Structures are given as C-alpha cells and as structure tokens.
Length: 147
Image (cartoon, rainbow, N blue to C red):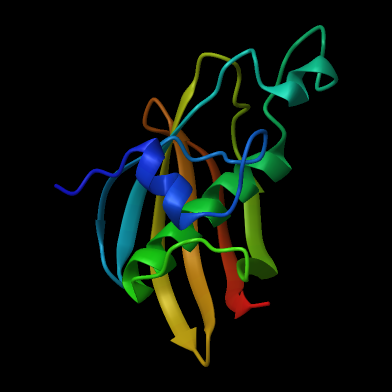
C-alpha cells in the first residue's frame, strides 16, 4: 500500500484552497489506477449557497475531485511535481452520471483507472462512492502542459 498525504499532494497538484479537493491518496499503481479520499465538511465554501437549507456538494466539484485524482495518478506516473510553469487541463468529460447526493460529513472514495494515453492526452474512468454506494461516475480527458 502506497499512501500519499496532503503535503505530498500539494507538491504534485498546483491547486490550493479552496480548490484543492483531494485530501489523501490511499494507494495507486503507476499508469493503471489510484484510490483517493475527499472528506466533505460543512466548512466548504460552496455550502454557503448550495444550498443553505440543505447542503449538497455540487456535482461539478465531484467531477473536479475525480479529475484531480486522475491528475495525481498521471503526475505519479510521469514523476512530475507541480510548478508555476505546468498545469493539467480538462479536455473533455463523457458519461457523467450522478446517483446519490453528497452531503457534509460524507467521505468520498475516489477510484480512477487509466483507460488510454495518446500523445499527452489521458482518458480515465472515475467513480466516487460514499459508504460503498456509487454517487458519481464519469470518463474524462485531460492533458498536461508546460506554460
């Protein structure tokens, strides 16, 4: 088992508060798969408006959490760390489905799998689960660029 804490994640991803969404990597295999954790708390800035009477973690942020986990997997596979001159960019999202809402107090377990890599573009599958129940699944395309 190869765990990665938030300090190491901050070296890999250029994201910072409030947009760094992955809290921990539980395990991974280079170029194959990665399992990560996102702890959802009532202190998330999005809950001020989504929705004050019944906080629900926005679907687009679930997609972003999955994308960040995929970018960590790619970074670990490339042996790259974050820098001011590098960035991971979304190239597409396919087959996104939302099954159950994610609320404060939930812990999302994010699983991403490498599907294909062609000329610097990755296609990955990803799922987010809470208590072993699927809350979101998707496929994403992204690329790594030097600025």
